[in-house]
Length: 206
Image 1: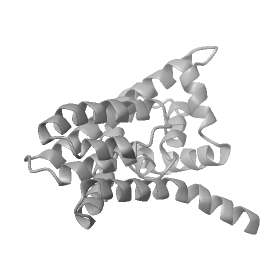
Image 2 (image 1 turned 90 degrees about the vertical axis):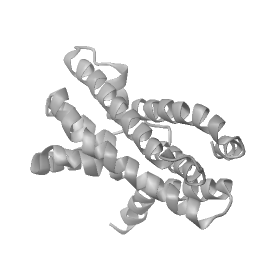
Image 3 (image 1 turned 180 degrees about the vertical axis):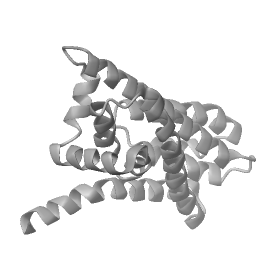
Image 4 (image 1 turned 60 degrees about the vertical axis):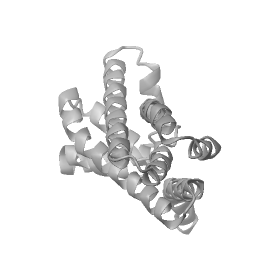
């Protein structure tokens, strides 16, 4: 992913925009449906490239594309999860959600959903590995799709802003776009693995 993005930074701006925006939309959409793609790193990398462009509204376009793709992916995944909940045999999508929501994380998500309602969706998007447990908790609470979508709008906007700011920071620290891309990807990946590392460190002590 880093090599592809770095190669894109050497292309003309028009080529970057023609290829980059549709690719960003598609990859973030897929990442929302299949929670293995590091979508945060993609947004940060795209923000680095946009930061070094002279075209107006490049950063705003990255923000809009990322937020829209994340929202559509979340809503589609939630709809598929609802179908699985109604089906007697479940579904592959529902099993994927359950596999990625450990019992302790799911219990925490259910408690936060009960206390804070759909506002918890915003935090779930910002906390690494927090989106799926909260989404599954919403499914188990039989939250309507419209209610979920209403709470997911600010969640996706906050998520896109956060990872874009990481990219802008990386782009501002280095003169070459590819250096900023490397820094932004490294930072986003570090953020994503930090919670799991912290839990492993605390577990023996507990």
